[in-house]
Length: 389
Ligand code: CA
Image 1 (cartoon, rainbow, N blue to C red):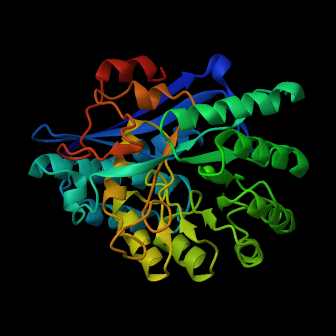
Image 2: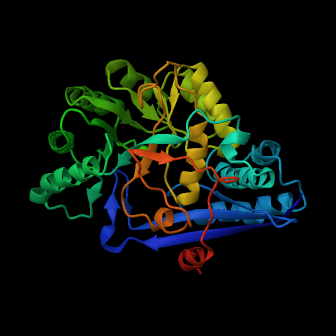
Image 3: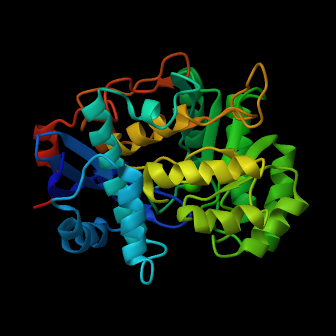
């Protein structure tokens, strides 16, 4: 079974009136870079590379650099292929676009291998600890500017309440765009809306210097917040250490880190309590296995970051199935020692429409796809509809 073709698809959906903000940027659209690898005996594998960065450079690396190396090569050995692609691009691509391109190819090759053997990817990765994963809602972003200060808190409270009503008991909200005082008022509003029993996470998207993050972390302690995500920029490992040492709120991060080498430094320097590799960014499922092994050796729970299309979510669920409780107990508790899955609740047709299958919440959980490979079917008509010309 050899690789016959490697094709890329850039998908784009403008969000129109549903535009939202994190601390870093406006999100006027959803975009995804998908790769489709086809074998000489007709098996098709899908992968996704990158998160919200521009998809064109990733497509170029796959199409112009890696595809010529892949065509005619065996299609059933993702680990070997990913190692070789990384070795090829090491001198100029240790982080960023090249690793995102490898991620996409790697995921597609696991999909192919699983389809070839008639097994789900998680079975090939060594087996599943769970068939469904406790989900958390990511929401409570910022609406489009200019902000109506009078509406900000009431709208936020109403939004937070909808997540509880739909069955979530863990909610992640955005902070970092406004002043500390305004953002703490937002956290207070969400806590008021959801009550004391919902576990609340906050995501700064690296908005702060360490000193501000520490000030905020101490405020968050009062609201019973269960993690503070990306408090400082990913390069500032000393800042991560300072935040982690100064506040009792667990520190999460890693969506902007790459490969086992990046996570080796991130973990050995004591930056986080929760590691968040993104499967479509960190190097794919092959690299995820190595990162997760490192994290477990450091006593750190791995909770993959999830963004992108339904392909990205399916890959994350396959990975999540294989994460051992950290540490083992006879009764693992979600978030405490049992991984959870990020389920972004903002409008995302690339996740909700692209696949024949649906991801829907059942008792607050998402099922791990059980079909061969990633266990998903891309709807080619929808693919064409969203593929940029
Ligand atoms: Ca994040």
